[in-house]
Length: 209
Image (tube, rainbow, N blue to C red; front, side, top):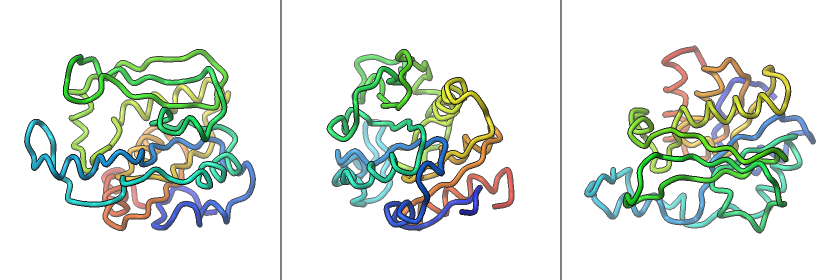
């Protein structure tokens, strides 16, 4: 499969075409099924919420089949929102915590990622204010700095830096942008044409894609 590209399509169908263990690292932030998109829309831009439009992409979490394919095609995984998918995963030591450095806010103090690495839990301190400087274009867009820290964390445990990163739920493209800026090879898949174009535009700021 051609690398350093973003594919528009259903990631399940794309993954079914991929060989076992052909991906070194899946780094992704799937829909959690908590209606994050509709919450932002219903807030109407009030209380710090930005209206990204009324969509239905976060109405339900992906079925287990999606994660079965992720585990089949990849050697290692870092999956944000892992607390929403514990019934799909096996126990592991290597959880990651994004500490947003702000307490008693209307949103969560932090976020959790499940990883396949049987290593000590680690905490990333990246302030909510710093994350907001990434100019969010997606309701659940991850901080670019957080995704870079994920890749650097994986580097230590994979033992090399020249490996392939895959994001099956690429959204507005933070994973692929982080991979590019760190000189990694990547593939992103996103079902939404709108977010595919946003992700490609973010990369075109630095490279021809």
